[in-house]
Length: 126
Image (cartoon, rainbow, N blue to C red; front, side, top):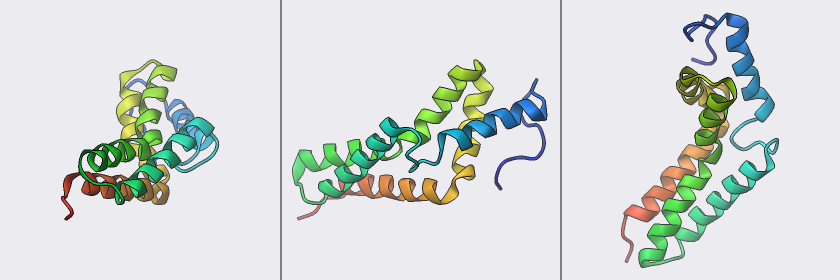
């Protein structure tokens, strides 16, 4: 799929839409270090997911859930940030749909890590 070649945002020109796409490049992938705080939160999420495999009971559930949410930090932060920057709700949906497609491998990696964290939180181990 990837980034659309045609205008999909009502009221935007192709150049204005590509300005949003350019923000995807400027802010980097879900695993990019261009936004250090978000990168640190993502890495913290990955570490919490890993730690959840060594815990039991409620601590395992909490650690797995928090780790899954933090692993996806940049994927949920980007739509809110660009919505605020461009002051248009359409940009939220556009970013939610196309940002992961712009960085498919990195998005898949953090998505799988989040799913592992959810699985760790949900499924009981003896």
